[in-house]
Length: 387
Image 1 (tube, helix red, strand yellow):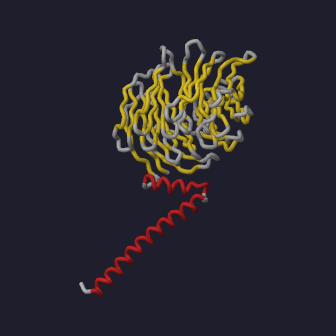
Image 2 (cartoon, one colour; image 1 turned 90 degrees about the vertical axis):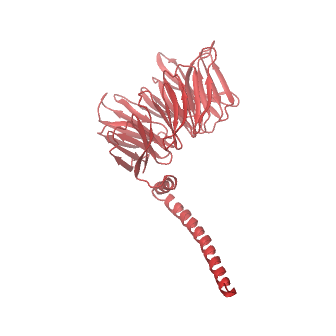
Image 3 (cartoon, one colour; image 1 turned 180 degrees about the vertical axis):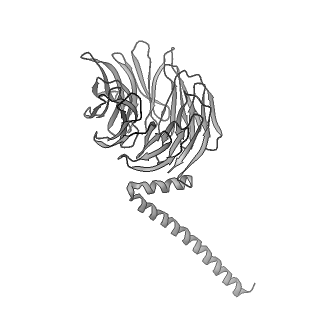
C-alpha cells in the first residue's frame, strides 16, 4: 500500500472511530432526553414502561416463567427475578428459567411469609422455626429457645426484621434485627399481649400491636417505641377493632381490623376511621407507596362490591363499583393490581385503568411489582405480565 493510500485509510478509520463514539454519545443523550420527557408525561407511566422495556424487553405480554407443585398452603414472594414458594414441606427458590436455586426441607404446619425489598422471612405460626431468605437462597435460620413459639415476623422496606414470640415468665417478647442479622432491640411484655410488630421505614421506631379490653369493649392499641432508647413514645387505641394486618408508610400506620380500617400517624393522631358498617370485607391492599385499597361488599358472597382507595392523609381518593368477581388485590409503588375472574387490570391510586390483560385462565393470585409489572399465579405456575 502506498503512503497516500495508507494515510487515506487511517483518516477513514479515524473518522469511523470518531463517528462511532459520537453515535454512542448521541444515543445516550437521546435516551436521557426521552427518559426526561417521558417521566413528565402521565405521572411517569411512560418512563415506567421504558424502564420495564430496558429490563425485560418487549412489553404488553405475559410470559410463563415458573412452575411448582400445587398446594393450597403455598405462600409466594417475588424477589427480583426469583420466585420463592413456601410450602409446609419445603422452601424453594426458582429463577425465571425454571431452575431451582434453593430447596430447603422444612416442617411448617402453618407457613406464613413477609417480604421486604430484597428479602423474605418465612415462619411457622405457633411453631419454633423461622427462615430468612434473599434472591440467592437461605441466609439464616432462627429457632426459639425453651420450646417457646413464634407468633409473627415482619420485614420493613429496608429489610429490618421484627419478631414477636412467646417468652417464659412474660406474656410476649419482641425482637428487632438489622439487615446484618444483629439484634438491635428487645422488649419483654409482662402486662399485655403483643400480637404483631413492624419497624418504621426510617428504621428508628418500632410499632407494636397490643391486645386488650377497654370499658368492656375489645381494643387494639398501637404502641410506638424508640429503637435506640427503648422508650415508649406514644400509643393509640382502636376501640372495637381487632388488628388483623397493618403497614407503616412514612409517618403513618394503616391498620386493617375486623370491623374497620384506620390510619394514624406516629404521634397518635387519628387520620381515618372507616367502619365497614353493614358491609363485608372482601379484600384489601395496604402496600401501595402512598395509598391503600379496601374492597367491601353488601353480601357475604357475591360479585357486587365497592373498591375504594385512600391516601396516607386519610382522604378518600376514588371509589369504583364492581359487578365482576375479584379474586385478589395487590399494591406496590403507584399501581393497584386487581385480578378478576378472567382478566387482570392495573389501576393507579385514583382507580384509572392503566393496563388490562384478558384470558388469565386459572390464575387465582397476583403480586404487584414496584416497577409496574405484575406476577400472576395459578395453582401450579406463575408468569410475569409486562404492561
